[in-house]
Length: 118
Image (cartoon, rainbow, N blue to C red; front, side, top):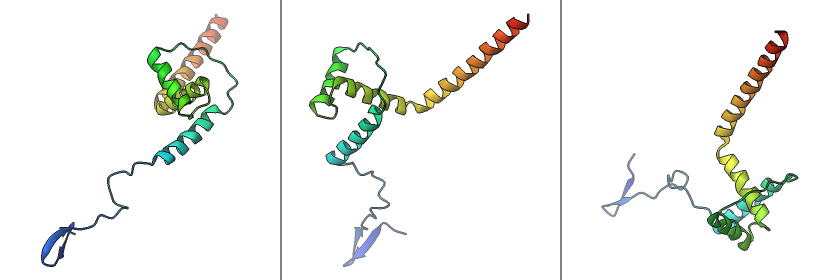
């Protein structure tokens, strides 16, 4: 099948089917804010733990941008959102680390049990 059509004796590119367009559609600003708001809401659920963290000037500016843009209500919310996104982006790494940590815990238990028997 050709990607061209003959119109009035001349070859013209066939119109692209939007469903088959390989170029991803860029979300609108409103869609991006809506997605960001939903993700932020998920990240802020159950925030009962406090973590103190020091950041450099550039990181602080980025947190403040989220607050100034009213994406987050505070630096704390902005930091919680970014931490949540970072964890989600590195899900495979955290899965591997969790699996290895479980194996280490099992080995420690085996070691303690062995030492108790001796």
